[in-house]
Image (cartoon, rainbow, N blue to C red):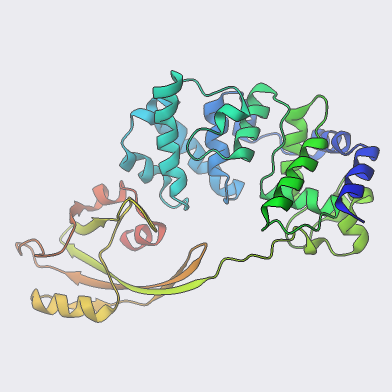
Length: 348
């Protein structure tokens, strides 16, 4: 069945009505960002939920709002404070864009988020789907979303076999998503699609028996739901190996701030070298002893990063390391910084 025919069949049996009815009975209704139409809170949740599970986001969301209760507070904060609260959530470009976006909302929009999806999409870090979700939930705008969960639901139901690595197929799916929008009830429909993708139409072992769209689903009829969505272009995974210098002096630890671009951009971390021997030799020259720890793998989106910690303790009164970028931080002070998750774990 072609994607166009699938769309017509599903529309005929009332896809939107099925989704809205299912969401009312079986969808999620207790998430904290569902109880508000405040664009700031909905925006924050949408950014945090990008590539992150709900269970992980819940604690971060509450802590973030306690520290930055509105867009004014976030815009006025320093980036280090924002990164510190984001520490461990990953994909740190989201936090940097969050901060930039808040500042633009204050500077260009008088502290009020644009009320339309088109206006929201002009802000840093807000793509088309995120803008549509905010506009739908906060203002009832009749716009389509197409995040990862929704792509999976729609491509399976429609039997959409176009390769989403190609922009023409992505555009075609957007058009189909727009054609299926209900005349009213956009909030429940949008939430329903998200809930279906997150809880029923999951990547592996989808629960087709619990899906309200099962009878109209092309992928289920074909017996191969995992064939959708189609996306042939894969990220080439790389393997990195580095050694981290865990340098301490009494209660202090030596940290260096990462550059503004690249992995862990702007975060504070331990000095890095290609080989543990670099830090072993450095310690010997400083009159200290190095202890090489057990290597571990930190998994990134595009790379498997093998990190080996090298512990070096400088005696009290020894001068600050010469030629080594960074500065000393006391224990609690260090843990209050924006730290990558594996570094925070080492320091803790």
